[in-house]
Length: 232
Image: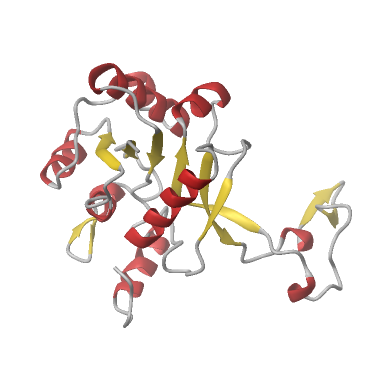
């Protein structure tokens, strides 16, 4: 099996400027993701898609392939992960041949483990090669959510779960951003990583599922690094 890993790393973060190369544990944040993909036989290459020369330099030094800087149209905060991934996929397959899967690894998820990536690839192999999505249990169950309608609070979901114990509600999950693996054909056809026939890759650990988007998230990541028994 041949899987292309793509790490999308735009330079213009507004909430946490420079986050992709901000030092975490003494190394740039993006390096955590580049390094974890090494040694996985199915991953034929780790390609970093960025518009930022500084990120490109750091990624190259970490061993990733950075064949170009993104075109301007894919460098705005309106550009989607799907558009970025398809641009990289099309380039790779035109230059180096077809792949069986495209694995999107966001650099903002530094604590995913190599064991979890391997498990995701095995799930992908055993479920007709459609899509595998990294998910985590939700912290606040959607059955307890509200919306505001005409100035009043009403249940967000009509068949709400108020009065039901949390352990009696059906488990709910949210995409954690750490793992998206899909066939090239499915991505080109559906133009989405979700809402297709997908298999969950469940992350149980709050550390593993951390997605860094704000300064508070980054401080939390630094705190996690100081905990004992952290895995990778």
